[in-house]
Image 1: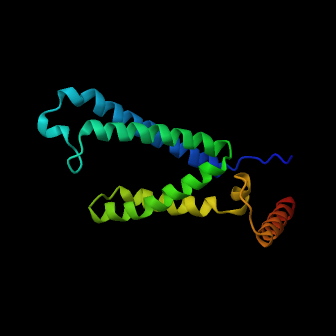
Image 2 (image 1 turned 120 degrees about the vertical axis):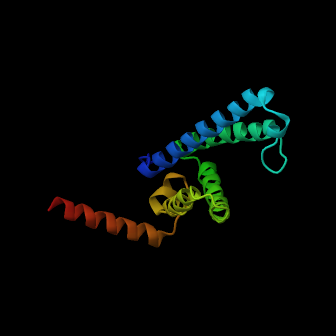
Image 3 (image 1 turned 180 degrees about the vertical axis):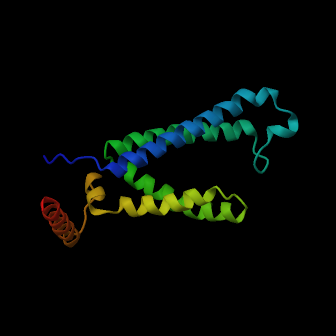
Length: 153
């Protein structure tokens, strides 16, 4: 059995998921904790959704992102697919957020396509057990061996 080294970019993506997980879990926990002290007007946040409901959603997403981060680190195919789906969903959400004057969404608008591009690189797909076209593997091998030869000079 061929053991493949974990690509560094996968570690970075998993780390970003862990940061997002902690942020969502913390925000959800704060909302749940502060719920009894909020005024009636403050108990609804987005579109009439109760803040306790939003808190539960955030805590759920926090747990999900943490599981996803560990799946990425273990090279699980399902983690690769879910990350791609989340990045694809995140791009239009970022655009809508920017239109709605949320300038910070530019960061996710930059990160999401970069992560998508990276996850489709042949060596990353191979790490996650995805099949790639042999012509791409040959091109990657030739490129890698050429760069190794130039490094030795």
